[in-house]
Length: 151
Image (cartoon, rainbow, N blue to C red; front, top):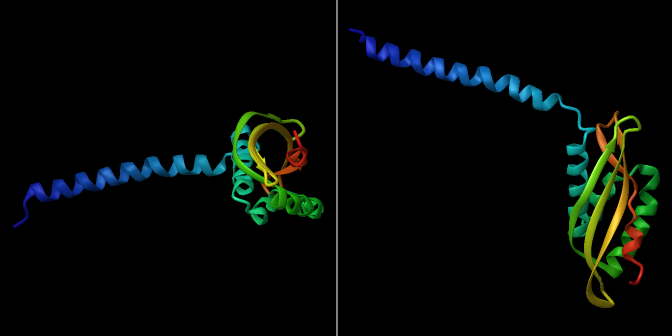
């Protein structure tokens, strides 16, 4: 003998699950389809790049450079690795120029030189470029060499 209570409970659960799935699919598709050439995408790239530098993961940091600039980056990375320790960074300002697919980031770095362990701060201005084919931001000009100069 079937009871109406058990059947209605199953229907109720089925309706709840269906409603949740019905709402989740459009929301997940909306987040996947959003272009990353906006300010939020640039902020994410700048923060990931500087986290790699902070933890001295130069191999990961090199991925934000075009292959034609990687040799220069590796030369700079060798100097940074020998002489500079980045302690922290904070993003001061970021803006995107949509027509040219470029962006500018101002980053405040706290660092010290290995030969003189006084904590120093410097604001770097970096130029970034969005590559539509790769859907990624890359560094055009890092200005990291400024960390090597004495105050």
